[in-house]
Image 1 (cartoon, rainbow, N blue to C red):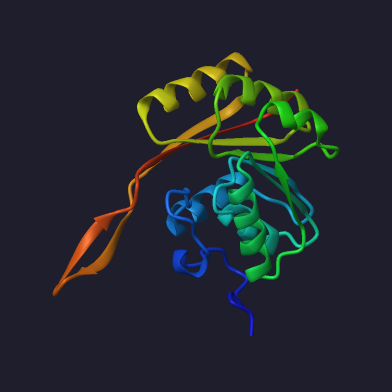
Image 2: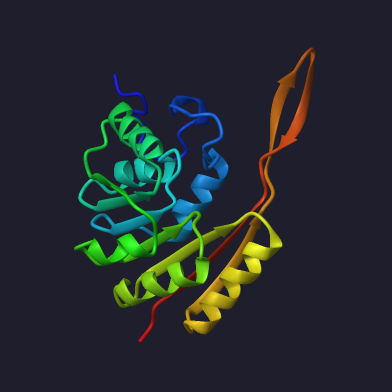
Length: 198
């Protein structure tokens, strides 16, 4: 039986292999990101700063005829993404070891969706992505603080991205701590998105 036999996104966090200190997009945030990406069955998705590989795994499962490029600069983390893809039987994810924006020029397929989950300098990454993004394509970027929110907002404005949306997620989970159950906040995050309209 498959580790995740469902067609819906939202794989529980504990099912992914982890490395301490490596970011993982929490389940609720991941579902939000996937909905904002507006993936198609044959989408070409670039995930920049793929971390643990949760977005590539979920996108690969949702779009079996699509192609997912997971970009990660750290060799150990890139190996973690590959292992997580193997755990869920995902075959349509290619892991690229390299730093954005430099490594983006070597990618052969232009994306129709891009998820920027990390990386510096953010404005240069957004600009490089924008040059390769297909017409009508979507760009989604996340920020965990006001400085990141401002930098991404400014970068999207400079590129004249259309239909910009900003969502700030604030999710709480019921957790057991000792003998009590408490609502614990999932790390809040800003999600910015927009479209390339000619």
